Amino acid sequence: MARTAPRIARLSRRQALTGGLALASLPLPFVRAQAATPIRIGFGVPISSPYAEEALEMVRGAGVAVSMFNDAGGLAGRHAELLVRDFRLNAKVAAAGTAELIKGGVDFMAGGLSPGVMLAINNVAKQHNVLFNGVSQSNQIVATPAWARTTFHEGPTPHMSSQVLADYAFPEFGQRVAFLAVDYATGHELVSGFKAAGQAHKMETVAEVYHPLGTTDFTPYLEKIAAAKPSIVIICNYGPDQQFSVQQADWMGLKKSAKVAVAVISMTARLAAGSTAYEDVIGAVGYYWKLEDTVASANAFNRRFRQDHGGRVPTDYAALGFAAPMAVLTAAKAAGSVATPKLIAAMEALKYDLYKGPEHYRACDHQAVQALYIVESRFTVDAADRDVFSIVKTYPANEAYLATCASEGHK
Image (cartoon, rainbow, N blue to C red; front, side, top):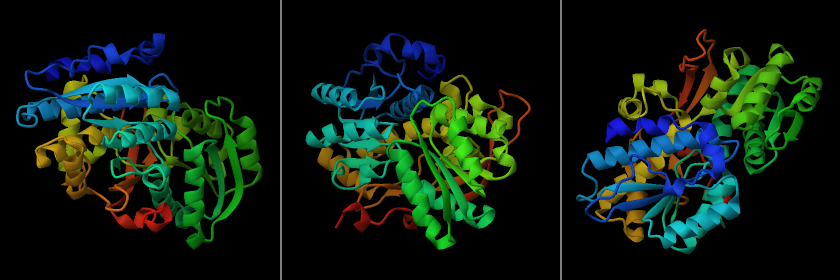
């Protein structure tokens, strides 16, 4: 089975976007019927969106999880199958698609990528008492009223990412901070997190500029930021928005007068933008593939990912696409069941190391407590070189970087 998986790696963005890509019927090589009733995993991601490349990486990572679980014998002989749906960047589509998957008998849901899509999946899943493990950057997913006992969150939150990057950047590069953020929930949540973390460092906000999703010309926004003379520019966006804003910050010479930091730095955007634009840019990330040099689980995951996907290395969202379903499958093995009450109990008790070192889910909100990393972009001569970051600081798994349970509305 492992030999057929590279077919997913060859799925181009153009193919994904053509005709909306009816992924429901796509004959994914790792989705196959078994003699025993399969464990059905609903996996919704916004492929027809500006985040298409990250979404496809998530699908690749989830495929590795299913392959590894099945190759290890599954759950008492029951193998898993992945039901991929393109939820676009549309909460209504995500809600309808989740309801359809649940009606079709999925055992649990995973995925998300964008906050609106993830929250829509979660809302329908909790109404039907189906466990959901999400990955998008969102504070709301682990807070009331969105959260339920069926809600788990494998990805870092904006609060977590901003806490660690603020801890590293403000003492190192100064306190005059300008923000360039996408004008939706994640952008605002990241900026709020930096402001809260910056109080201990006497941070001064000299500019706070928001842009629409899908912006291509960042010149007017960056001119406002340059005029404020910041010591640090923190970019709070993702995907092509991040690629274009970092490129244009470089073209305008902003890196000569300020340190450019990216709240959630994207390997996909870095590869698209090129080495020069990102050189010396720092950022927070939940995974980087070079962890394989020091972390055994990262090495094992990367080796299987390369085997299944034509030698390519995983991005951060490929790793999250792997971890979200794999954590639930690991809990199912511990519980001996995929019944929701037993899955919840097993997830709450789970101490796991799947791809980056020890993790667990915090009791009050089911947020994954995990290591985070500060990376700096490297100059590379070869455009195909995927060793694009250097890890400059590791923040081991620590609940201190999470928002308090009380602030999220949990008793």
